[in-house]
Image: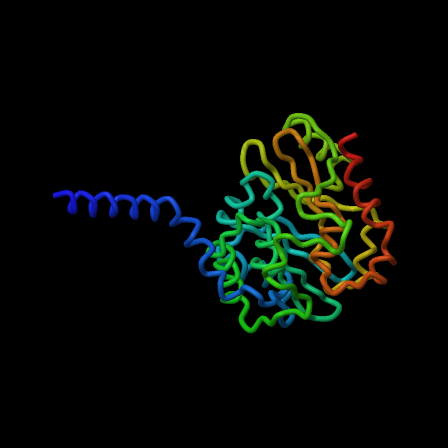
Length: 284
């Protein structure tokens, strides 16, 4: 009888342990094949015009959030779906709620932000590969024959990425203003009569992601260091629990341009500060 009771208790212990850990294990177990390997920053493909690309994205189950022109003869389509918004609604994860497609009318090509790359960078230890790999599969199915960009980074390095010693991490944000959610949204909409507001995406009652237009001089940095990665714009502002903030530009630019050298970075040395100043203006 004692042996039987021991076996029953052991079984209950195992089942309880599995039940508690199963969700996180399932979410991360399938990243084993990525460990130590490069993940491309972008997915590149043959040219598709804006209206056709929007139709393909909608057919794949995505919602078009906004279209924006970051450079001349170029359009960024910002898009999302319920799975991305659910991840973005988690504390300090709003930036992961959207993906971007840059359509380059000048060079006749397209470039998607890789959901696995940016998902891992923005979700950090909360990254759920099942969610973000599913977005990758949807994109690949809707836009066949996409290729990896030369821009890439080791999967293992994405969560703790910073450009170099002394440079910011994902958690190092620029605080732009504080107030109630309603007050901060109102300020974003009222500044310049709303002309700078590109999109407003609600993630929860106290969490929004807002796309914002930088000043004309500030956003020229994209042309200087590479229009191919122009999906970096529009810049986004997180409004969450009474604080408006943005990703530190030294982090976001370096993450979006992983091939950028220190010498190239110095050519836009004033830009991170200019971005913060541009985004602070509506909240003063």
